Length: 401
Length: 137
Image (cartoon, rainbow over all chains, first blue to last red; front, side, top):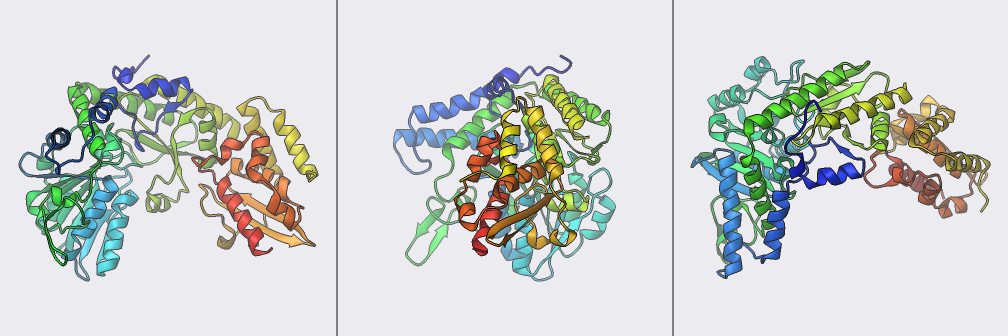
């Protein structure tokens, strides 16, 4: 095999899927889980579940310890150091909604919120709706032909009225890294808050929130080989002061009377109710697993696979790749073939890829496409997976053309 | 309830199919036989929401019998819609209410096309058909 994955056996679902003749190439949607995560969740439930930050009993202490250990592991993964706090939410979407509601008081009529043309709905709609609530203006940064935010346009569009910049680190459709450093510096120069949607970016390589200099960084556990139902919000200490409490309930409160209450600061003040305890512990286990891998080898493997995928697609007649994907995924359309038909025939052949608008309807509309097929990679994929995909693609195109 | 002639033909054709390739080819053939929908019917009001591809569906009662017409820009869903129309066109209002459409696709060996994870829109087409039949009933 040209590109084998030394980590494939660490993910038991891959073997199961293979027995069902399924080739999983929809990793930008969610990933399979390492055995280490399954063990951690099973261990937690088998050894005594308990609520966190409440009880003084021993199971409660164990659960709280494991939960807080995960918080430290996430902070380490992002190199947050003492610069900020890690808040656990129920997903990247809820983290972004927390920001859009918790920061709402900062916006007045005519203020500007800047996003980019490639945002996933999760990093578009919360801001779009915030703009509507406050009569603020949503400014959309255009892209260049490579699917990268146009910095010349951005330099003009980010200005004194900009209160907040919210952009993706890595596009879930175009697979292109975005020039965060420049955008963040520009936004900061105008006194704007900066939010990075790291849902795709976090999965590829290591990122340092202190070096990035953003105020908030958001990602979801399940795309990073962790359990679903857990999101992460990193907030810089200074920026967290702006964040108002949003959801109210158990454990986020300091003092409560019938008619008034005071609330805890971050992180606990933003974790109302029982958090996804098992999920957070599982994410910690996934991070331990990922930390144990040879990071440069993972990056090299992903780059080799991506190159293999891109070259194979470009060698095929009529295939048009969207943008200039750099890592992780490739989206494409085929001339004269409807993406729904192609998706149908790939599914028939056991190829699990994503078809449609990829939760980025405005982007697809701007490209005058009704949809596209997206192949997305993970560290456990190998070149045999891609060969099976190519075979199925050729077979499907034979039938459709 | 006796099956419409077209439905009998569909059942014979699809039950004889052995491989997924044959089934897919047959679906495309059925889709190609679907009469073109007049341009005036291809309007937003007739668009079925919830499909990955555009699907238009119109239906009318003629002398107590349903006559549906449909179109799609994607060939597989067009084939599925053709098979749906083969089963329902000509039915009375009461018969249309009674017909078990998921079972119809099951008999054709196409039940997987109706699973909740399939985004091809066949489920949405069935719901739209039900809504149309209730409005005009």
